[in-house]
Amino acid sequence: MRAEPTILHVDLDAFFAAVEQRDKPSLRGKPVVVGGVGGRGVVATASYEARAFGVHSAMPTAEARRRCPNAAFLAGRFPAYREASTAVMELLRSISPLVEPLSLDEAFVDLAAADLPDLSVAGVSAFARDLKQRVSDVTGGLTGSVGIGSSKLIAKIASELDKPDGLVVIAPGMEQDLLRPMQVTVIPGVGPATAESLRRIGVHTVAELEEISADELVRVLGRAQGSNLYQLARAQDDRPVVAEREAKSISVEDTYESDYVDRKLLNALVERQAAKVTERLRKARLSGRTVTLKVRLHDFSTHTRSATLPGPTDDGRTVARVARTLLSELDTSGGVRLLGVGVSALTDWIQDDLFADTDEAADDPVDEETETALSAMSRRRVWLPGLDVVHDEHGAGWVWGSGRGVVTVRFETTETPAGKVRSFPADDPALRLSRPAPEE
DNA sequence: TCTGGGGTCCTAGGACCC
DNA sequence: TCTGGGGTCCTAGGACCC
Image: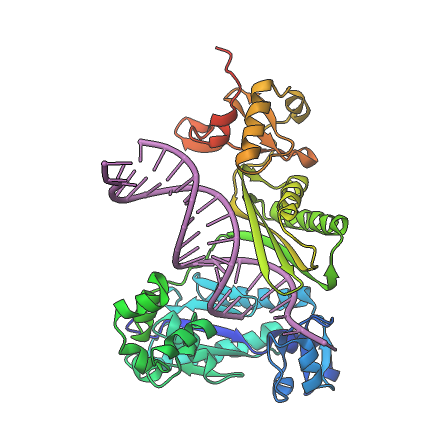
């Protein structure tokens, strides 16, 4: 918690719907619902006109249609949303280097890192009024709600207080007065399950939460959530605004209009998803070691199966084969409603043209010892497709996923005064299991 | 016509290692 | 005959957010 109100939270109002109304004047002043328009769709964003009919985010679109049959139901145009979002984020970054986007329509801005002459309540209020105007200018008229306070917690809650087109600044010192009468669910991270756990120990408001000891909270909610909530209940929040956060996973999932049973079809769908995920990986210049398959069955039960490769890949066929193997472990005879493929344990390990002569490398024979190692691995973890041994001046290593003439190699590169040094991690289980007999 | 898609973080148990 | 202890990695599931 800071002594001055220097954390700002912006939240664009009914963002997707607002972009649609901006671009289609006939929709202005009318209920607009953006989201899945199919039988199993849900609402992503409802315009304020639609909210008046009780339509809200995450509601099944079918229910939204019942409540508001005259609304315009739109599937969404993400390129347009992204463009508006980018304009706003660029504006924010022109104000402060410390901008932390939370989604397309939300961000924290650290005003302490900006060049503001006056960080008093009056000063930041005047600044925010100007900012809201500039948001409107760069987006062709979109509005945003702004909250400012001495911490992320307070800024975020403040931006909720006066939507839409709101501006709320919480003066330092007033944080606990603000929080105490509120329901615990105003605290980000307290959802239905946590609220129910708290209700069972008689806690509904932040004031009541404050009465609970840290030990008790940890007992009820677990270590991380318990101690977090103990602090947040007291408005103690020192989380910094973090500008660059690296992606931890990339995934694709699809819910189908009807449940699928046919294995061949399911396999084909998984392969398509693997291709999509790896395309995104390559665009982001990333590769990952862990492949996760997600399956939602006819009864809405959700299951994940994952397997970790000895090294990162961005190859669609590799991810597809692993995902298909994982799918084969699940009983899908009752029908599959959703399939998803994700890749995590991401690295930006070099995946460039280290091996200009890829073909020659791939021609290296896989010897008997390697075969043995591979089958040993396939018993213990996941079977590894298309693995080839290659050599360069630094030694031998594994290569997999050689699509497009690009190889992913489990090297580590270290910057030294003498230049870049490439090495294989000595404790890599893949290398230990399967390093071919060295010619000494 | 019940319940999206893209994420993050946490927990708990087991394997494995020293 | 009586079973350490800590650290790390992996997996599955769940809560939560927008």
